[in-house]
Image (tube, rainbow, N blue to C red; front, side, top):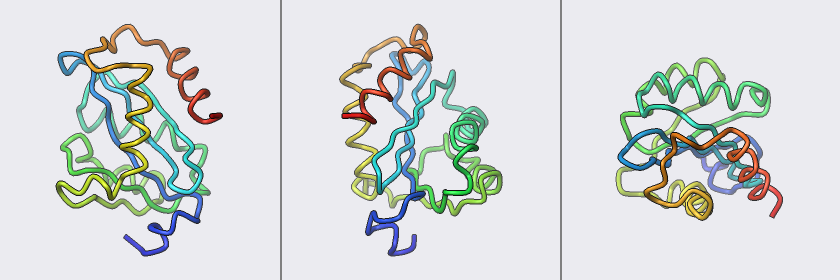
Length: 141
């Protein structure tokens, strides 16, 4: 990805990941801006690429004019990356395998989200209101 992304000075360079629920049922899609640290988060019922694609576009569509790049890991849930890139007119990049620090802000943010939705939490019962509350808390800390 371009070196400007590493500087964390430009709004619109994003990192994306999934937090998986108990027994691999349900997940939370987390997206953060590298410069501002702003979190966007939404619940997905499955880790299937089409579900991740739809939720990513839904969460980012209103910010489309501000977006430049997005970086994910190499999980198969991001297999529809080209559809995401086309829909949002954004450059899509992958971190190198086992280089989680290339998405370090997102990994850290996922740790903060886990304070509210701990490992082994059943994501089936999480409401959008609960998600919005956590996003509000983390974005205004």
